[in-house]
Length: 429
Image (cartoon, rainbow, N blue to C red; front, side, top):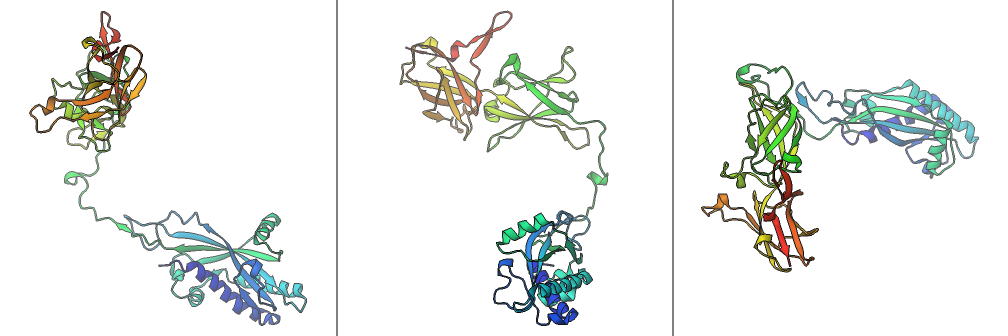
C-alpha cells in the first residue's frame, strides 16, 4: 500500500528523470543541476545551468476521493477512501552566470519539456529507485504527467507570491497519487438467511403512518394527565397502530405506548384521539411520565411483518400543581415559604421555576418521595419557594418545567369559559 512517502517519491523520481535525460539530450547541458527548491532560493550556491522543479500546489482529485480503495475492497465491504492528490509543479530553467544565460536557460527548458513530453507516464522502476518504501508504484492507477497552460495573470500571481523575479517556466500536473488510508476495512459476514425463516424481503403496499401535528384540548399550549390530545396525520386509523411517547430527558424514561380512542362518527378520517391516562386509571402515572416535552411516533405493526414507524412530533406535557397556602387559605407574607406539589414528578436535571407576579423564582428545595414508602406511587414532587416582595394582591401561580408551564385555568359554565383556578392562586398581603 502507498504511504505518506508518495509525494516525496514522485518529486524525487521527476528530479532523477530530468537529471539523467536532459544532459543526454543536449551535450551543452552536461553538468546541469536539477533542484527542488523554492523559486526565491533556486540559485543559491549555483553558478552553472540548472533546472528547478518546485511543487507549488496539491489538490484533491475529485474523481478518486469517494471511491473505495482499489484492489482492497470486495463486494459487500467498505473501506475509507485513499487520499487522492494531484501534484502541481513549476519547472524553471536558469543559464550559467558567465555565459549567455538566456540562451542556455532556453535550451535547458526546451530539453526538459521534451523529456517530460516523451515520458507521460512515470514507470514503477523510476519511482522505486528514487525513494524505496513509498510503494506508490504499486497503486492500480498509473502516474501521469500533463502540461498545464497558465495565463499571464496566473503566472503573475504565482511569481508575486514567490517574492522573486519572474523566470520563464512551464507548469505540469502529476495525477493521481493515491495515499492509502490507515483506517481498517470493514468486512461483513456472509448472508445466511434473508429475513425470518429465509422468507426474503418484505414488501408492504401503501405508505406508513405519518404525523403532522398534536392538538391539545381547548386551545391549550400543553396537555395534562387525564386529558385527550388530537393527532393529525395520515394513515393513522389502522387498528394495529399504537402511539409511542418517549421523554426527551438526558436519562430518558421507558417509552409509553397508548392506544387510540375509538373514533367518533363525526371525527375526520385523518384525526385520532389519544388520552393521557390520569392517576386514577394509571396507578404508575407519576413514575411513567415526566413534565416537559415528549416525542410522539405512530407505530404500525402488521401481523407477521416488521413494524413501520412514523416521523416524530413533539407534545408538551404540562405539570399539574397544588399550592399551599392557596389564596382561599389566607395570605402568604413576603419571605414566607410557598409549597408547590408537581405531578408527574420532576426528574433529575430538569429546570424548574415558579412564575408569580411577573417574576421567575428559583426553588429553595425540591423533595422527592421515598421509594420505600408504601405511598410512593401516589406521591408527587414537593418544591418550596420563597414568596417575593411584590405589591399586595392575588396572583395566579404557574410552575415551569423544562419550558412547559402548568395551566392555571379551569373551565366553568355552559358553554365552558376559562377562568383562573382559585386553587392555583396566592394572596400576598
